[in-house]
Amino acid sequence: MDTRVLRYFLKVAETNNITRAAEQLHVTQPTLSRQIMDLEEELGVPLFDRQRRQMHLNQAGVLFRQRASMMLALLEQAENELHQQGTDLTGTINLGVVETGVGGFMMGMVAKFRDRYPGVQFALFDGDGDSLRERLDQGAEDIVALVEPVEAAKYNYMRLPVREEWGIIMKKDDPLTRRDVLTREDLYDLPLIVGRRGIMRDSVSDVLKLNQTKLNILLTINLPMVSRDLVVNHHYYHLGIRGVYEMYKDDDLAFVPFSPQKTSGHLLAWRKNTILSPVVEKFLQLVAANGGEM
Image (cartoon, rainbow, N blue to C red):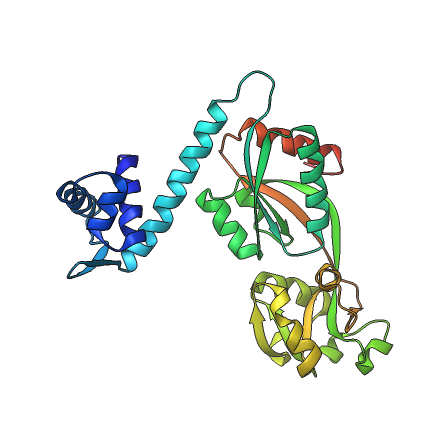
């Protein structure tokens, strides 16, 4: 598939109009129309809903736009890497970072690497573990920092020197803040906010011997920051890690850990059977020199 056709498709998707897209691409309208129809024929599905002079992406078109954008971005990155000259390290590292306390460590590594190699850029994406692993599998990220547990058999990885303690994030004046620790019996009575990753809940449950059917889970979230208002103003309780509480930097919140204690480590992961670019290899070497363990 010609990359030129992908760019044609993306321009039509952006403008919703063949005539306007043709003008911006400096091609004739019949030529552009034929290219789009040939693309749809090659793929075996229509990509647009056509209404008079307007063209709007259908469901297949939306999916293909995501993939086409990703393919062109990866091609551009590969071209940049191939044009590196001499000992000057240049290029872009696509780095995903889970929203936990590991962010501070990773940003320290980014700053140190940029000081050493100013020609290298970073494209950062933060999210939960499911989003990051999906982007890694699709090739949108070179490496991702994840909180354990992770299906580590799918990836190459390096252990990071950051561990997180699990507990409950709550309003600062809540009576439970007078406690040093919380037990499983305490959790059964609380209106809970939890992360959407079932593997995380299972990991916590294994340590605390929780009966998950007795938990009063009112809300599942993928990113923690959105739940702050529910905790402060509506007396919800966020089952999470200390690093999330510290990210809030909010004097209205408090964190109480569990007993028995539950902690999780972090991994820096990348796809197996993938040739890493020189800049990513160098970055991994820096992380390893600062506490990362293969």
